[in-house]
Length: 111
Image (cartoon, rainbow, N blue to C red; front, side):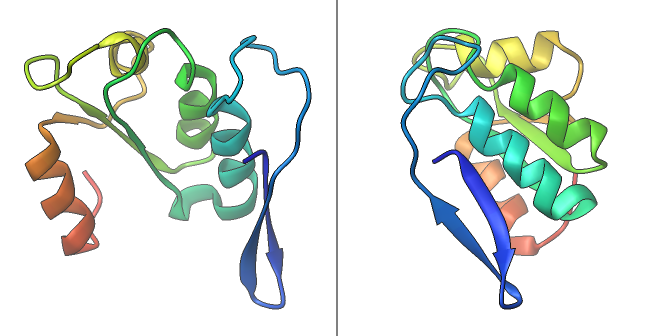
């Protein structure tokens, strides 16, 4: 998923293939970047367990657009690469286990 755009009052997701700056395919960075552009301060990015730094740049874009970023905690992550990179970049508003992330989303609040 590389493009999210408002269409007829809603959002459309487009699938594209191509080179991305992180070198990861699939990559979450382009998706989060487009979410930041479309939704700005309404965006909520959740970074769960995964390998590498993919997602750190997109999470920064969500943060810079006024959105919120939540990362899975190290204790419950199988691999803390992706959430760890987001935490290290300083953009995570909260670092939580998956159960708490789910409750946060369900409450429709921001950290």
